[in-house]
Image (cartoon, one colour):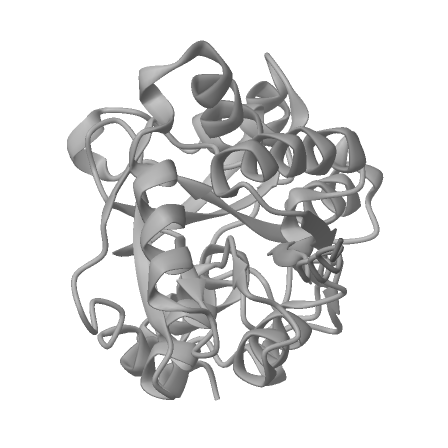
Length: 274
């Protein structure tokens, strides 16, 4: 009697999250996403947090990550190299957002009164956390490298905002809904720091809008697996478990298919930040 040899173990599907989520509760959120994707993809899944946006992009391009929840500039960089962005987040019915430059309430600052002060940003590849505000400042004739005494990269929105509250930075930036929603910068701050935290900050300026975050998939991922992941993400809003993931991990109401080369416009913002 012949015995069939055991099937080889399937390699895990590797999904990366951005460091901008912060450290608080991120492991619990990663584990929830891992459990959900394992059931949806019917294969082992590993979910990890990238050390930086640069690492996130490199992992996608090298195949060390199969897919990721990526900020817009990472989507733009990898898409230009042949990576496909499967879906992008939708918030308040919109697939774009803007950034707000903020300071501590009572600081008495303005865009014209930043000389010699320290700034705290998220990451060099963070659109709302660096690229949009830097491009905005330059459009107003403010050269950040000559204006700020220091520019610190905190690695997360929470870290940048807390630097402003502690006094180690005078200005930071936060993602927030587009003007058409009627919502203010406080919506982004309270998403990161909790209810009423927006009262601790003042607005300096809003920036232009940019496409929302997306989910790029590495070029080595088989089309069937990529298609199943896309189907899974597009259907998240249909179940309570999926809705919890949308809110807790992706800060989105739902996903929509991402248009091909939909992030190309961000290169103008990237060039302005140099």
